[in-house]
Image (tube, rainbow, N blue to C red; front, side, top):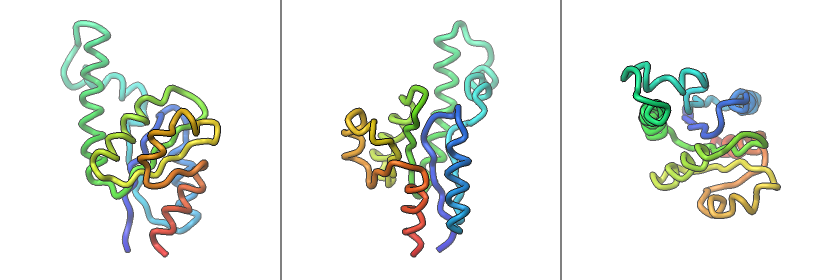
Length: 147
C-alpha cells in the first residue's frame, strides 16, 4: 500500500500537525498531511488578495472564508482520512465544521480529543469512525491500516 493522504482538521495556531507528522514518521508511515492554510495572516487576507478590498470586516472575513472553504473541500475530497484534533486551546468551531463535513461526505473521521472534552463532543464522537485521546494514538491507528 502506498502513501495515505490525511486531511488534518483543526486550529492553525499551534504545531500539532508537525507533532502528528513526527509520530507518523517514527512509525514508518508514508503520509501526506494536508489541511487548512497554516499561515494565519494569509488565511485571513486571501479573500482580499484575490478579490480586492472588501467594503468592511464582515465581507473581508466572508470572502476569505469562501476561498478557504474552496481549499478545504478540494483537499478533503482527495484525502483518504480526516483527523480532527480538538486541542486544549483556541476556539474549535472550524474543527467541528470540518469534522462534520468529513462525516457527511463519507470520509472516515478519526477524532482526537482529551478526556475533558468527552461531554462537549459526544455527538461528534458518536459519528466518528474512531475517537482517541492523543495524536500518538491517532498515528498508531493510522499505522494499523498498513499491517
